[in-house]
Length: 422
Image (cartoon, rainbow, N blue to C red; front, side, top):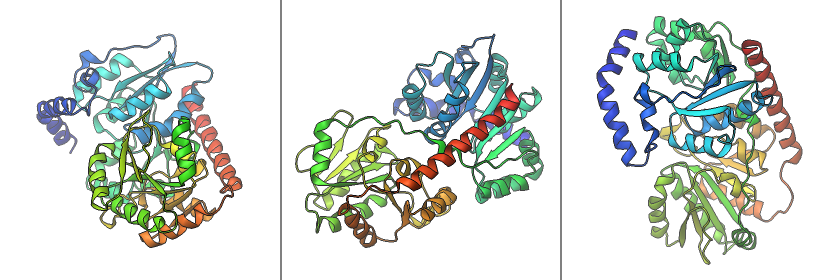
């Protein structure tokens, strides 16, 4: 199977190059640095040879966001250099916002898992510890790392039933790859169970590092803050196709009680903003696509956010939030988006029945009455209307418990890594 995988990577590599060039023209790749994914000549090595190098690969926005508290903690004494690789453009933008000012932390795009690129990458960067975040399992990289005897950690490892069954089709290759990890820190008890079945040799379940996430709040300008204060509002976060209609119907129900209610929609994919606007027009709802720095126009009922990195700006002021990818039955095996940021900002969270990706987190939040399941727009609108009529602070004691748990998880993970790198 490994030979077939390597053959396919090499065979399709020219097509991959064409696809990435095409994505560049769609503004889905960095217009200059996209070559880092494709050519070893573009690796642009920047490291201090007098320090140990920790390489952390976090493919997309969510993975990098969960790793940032750990990076900052490991970097407190400036003992190490860090290489951070990501796959997506949005994750590289987050790096620029959070870590670019650190001179000992470098960002590069993750190369294609092609044997020749893999060998050159490891040879040129020569890391002392490698950390892959969540579900980043790349056979050529992992086996070459093992060959070079570089310690390899799977951080917040996420193995679903679907992922396990896929790997279980090729058990010998799966065993070879997963036994290459020196340490696996699963994100959930379910992932721990599947990693054990994949015969990982060193598994320690310390908890989900996403609970240690920090909230980097950018204050909303005073004009927009006043509009939201006067009119009352709620947020629909990380919505997917079909869920916006659900949210618009919820808005219409709430409007029967609060005629000036504003609904803020922050879609999972902001390039869908125009389609959401079209849906608003079909319901005769006055909407605005809001970019960074713009003012909310008078009389707008639905505000569609089309900027990344501003979620906390609105959640910081928000009392109630619906979190998407949870109402679509066909997505039930991949359902759920991260509710932790909203919880830490003391929002009351509502979600649909399909939250497989964050099942354990939601169980914890439901236990502390931070989140609640809803099944339709009538139920959601009733609960949000009730929230808007109350002025008390939400879940202060419970949120303190969640924050303490996050700090402990971060401390425990940091201690495990210290034993490897020091």
